[in-house]
Image (tube, rainbow, N blue to C red; front, side, top):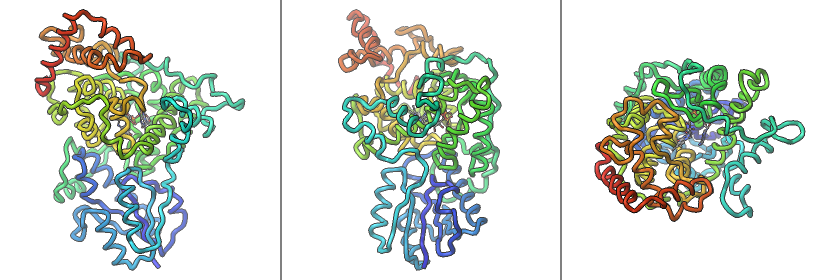
Length: 512
Ligand SMILES: Cc1cc2nc3c(=O)[nH]c(=O)nc-3n(C[C@H](O)[C@H](O)[C@H](O)COP(=O)(O)OP(=O)(O)OC[C@H]3O[C@@H](n4cnc5c(N)ncnc54)[C@H](O)[C@@H]3O)c2cc1C
């Protein structure tokens, strides 16, 4: 009697109930396959991090007495796809049962479901025991409520349901649900940016294996000083370091960007969370515990802001994914069709903000939320880049990019491609925002104050042209109607000049 249990590369939670007991009849199967590395072009660090995490997980399970079957990327019998490998392993081991955990990605969910039904063995799928809410939780929350889906409404329900940051009288701790208005400061060098809490692994041998297997990647592998956590102990150490050093400034500087720090006060915990080395509940609880122990050092505004990202946005985004897939993938409500500029793959662009944000992404596989949303995303949105091209780039480049979280963030929040299901407004900006929230404009080849001149920052004409193009759609939107109406109220001559400038920028978008 052998039960084969498949573990995917983002199912690295050693605390899963599967592992509570050592069962000699259970064989845990992990495999590194080209079907996963190749379905989109990935950043080198992402492939490294997932494979390194899988290998560490396999070794730790074996050390605890579990039986493990591991297929490395270069193994001669690796057929490079889940189904083919599983069929072989089930036959070779004389398996009598097949089990897997619920995948987070629609594509894999369907593929494994089909495999399970067709494998000819008794089988089951169990929860990955990670998220606070079920796949359908968001749809259920909004069922029968009509109107738009608002993250804030769902977040409050999650606070009540989990009891996190709730006072004994059932009211939100501190008397308010949200302290975001306190969280919008630019960062000018003080308080000092926290010392980074990165790891330094040597993954050169693994990188050589990946390259020898012919896996195509982009970006810097950083294999000799690899920064991402690959097991739970490392992830817990990073959580601890972030809470101590980053959380105190997280709220105030959540929207700030600076050329001297790639993360400022952000946690860089998304990889550890998304591969399930950490659970969202423990991360939120740990932040709240710091606040309770020392509210002066870990203020409520910072703690609430952080907790909202984890139990609010993260769960909300996942709910949108499961409610709207598979159709969501082709969303393009604004009909945008420009190709992604070539410099997204090289970082060779004269706009300082883009050079920093793209360059950092290629170098580190990481950018924080505002770089993703208000620099890179805003540029693509206002320029009119095809959302599917933007989405594939984000899926490939970021260490934490798994489709369930990346796709709604890109298509919904950043590109408004779902027509406003997820976001209540298009998130876009002109150069004044970048100039206020970062130091990127300093020394830039372009002038952030100019709209139309030779040296005018491209963000300006693209921004106003965006509102001109979509004035009708957004004129009544209470959050951005003002910008759309301002654009509509321009003189005909101004409109013509903005449109001509934006068209010229689009025509030479690869040379900005
Ligand atoms: C266009 C775009 C693409 C994005 N793609 C991804 C992605 O592929 N994978 C991903 O995990 N996040 C994505 N995000 C959300 C967010 O930008 C990242 O989670 C965050 O930058 C990761 O860095 P951090 O761990 O330092 O986050 P912190 O700022 O420290 O936030 C803490 C945690 O909150 C969670 N979180 C915060 N915002 C979001 C959000 N909008 N959606 C889901 N979780 C959130 C993350 O788990 C994050 O680790 C994207 C956002 C945008 C605007």
